[in-house]
Image (cartoon, rainbow, N blue to C red; front, side, top):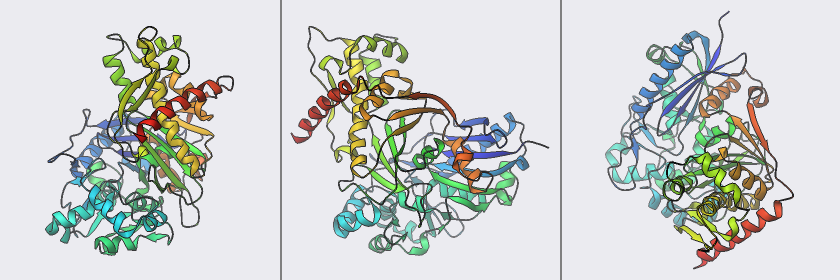
Length: 499
């Protein structure tokens, strides 16, 4: 009997990755991504960012072909397909399911005035209590921009959808979406537990433009004959899971329950925690969405904290402060000689644009407390990593104020989490245990598909083979030193915000 597999697709703005997971052992059999160089983003004006949905499909096709060849897998060996995708994008299609314009993707900022106007005119209480966020720069506001600026295109729209919905439609011929997806577009009403009619009415959107809602874990459609022929998959294979990249990253790390945290720390950093009660931040410093296991009967919210100035600061320090040619590992070794708190040096890491956690202020990056007679490169290198961690903890305090009890942080062993200094400082300040795993979004999407089609009875069975690489416990003997350093950093930040 031939082996059986699950296929996961991760539709990113830089590439599309595909992975095959062996159902018998839960391990990844093959992975590939295209393009090998970063995918182009069109920016006709400052602040705009668009991509052609066809490009995602083409790269998905190349990735699927590569992994099926590498693993010697036939289409009939694949039992289900799951999709992870870049959040907050807008794809518009007509009645023939043809794309009407390039997708306005997550990092496009043109819709900010449309979201802000809705927030002010509808009212903060209505928006926050029902949507848990301001309409902001999310999918609904992007569609409002199209309505006002491209009315002829808007009139032809049959359905609007998210990037993952589009890929699912290309696979199955059926346009549908999920509650989690609607929530990330600001179109799910958490009070009435149905699409947000008041926002649809405000913007003048016909509710028929909203795709049918399917559960996140379910048979959402089946591979049709056209897609099967194009991709080499078997007609009738179920598409049984989809989620935005941050909820899916949490799923990939088996983060499902209240108080559990998933974190990434690349160029920017994300802390994504699960909340068991409906709540929101009144200042919208963090965003709240329906998590993958949210339902009308079970409140499971994903609270998303994003820090723009994360790995980008560490990379800047390496280029401009560290000895030339030094590796990140060697940088970390140099910091071993510097005590917790960097001997009084603090770095505020917000030099990569406005930060939502600071209520969209742009305070920049600053270095404080340097003494020319005792501080050197190692102090700056340590202070940079501490500043990044402290910014995470500053945002996590908001999450705690919302009722989240943060005891455990799950992360992939990659990027900033490769640094012992970063890990120890995060555990030391937060008091949380950090668990590092070997996984990624496309593998998570494949396992999500296994849950959705019933191959796995639950998430614990799906992720039983998740490879735990390390556990970092907070050092209680050093806790007071970490907290003192964080307190000094926080005082410095808050004095800057007040001025």
